[in-house]
Length: 260
Image (tube, rainbow, N blue to C red; front, side, top):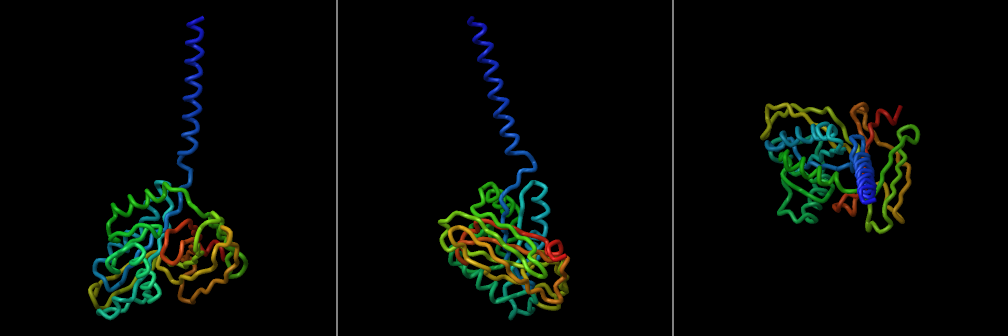
């Protein structure tokens, strides 16, 4: 009888271990999606320290997708370098203001370039590849607080749906249009004589709504300029607690796929 009980307990233990391993394998299998991580880079063509950060931003999406981490890059070109020898054609005072808001919320001494901000929560020098990858992985391991979907809603229109917790504070839904495969031959300033390459350059940023009772559904028209290459455009929607708070969720789609 004693041996029978021992064999029965052993069989039960093996069964429990097998079930646990199956559950673990299911939750960690390669196809399991991670939280989409928004990576913002504040940069300028007039800054000699920025090209390595621009290059890093351009490869993060591809490098980490191989490790099942979805990176949504946003390149914000600030305008305070424009008076120092070269005017950045992608720069905007609006993007400078966004960085200044992060300066206050993240308690940074002052705006600088290149600066990287991950999910609106962590900032560091934008050309630090090791810090970027470790921070992105940490954020990717967290659960998304808001689920975002983007779909076509007809000619040059997008349907945006957001679902999140009801207690999200001042949760704003933001739309960014980004463009890849851009380059500039810089004629003067710190990068004079160089050809700079850019990815995920933010062409437009606007608020498209505020979550009510943890949800939002809206259709927004797109404002695409003639010189923007449609095959290189992406639409990014992210939910942020106020203009410079933590990002609760995000999604990104290629516009060429949505506008056919």
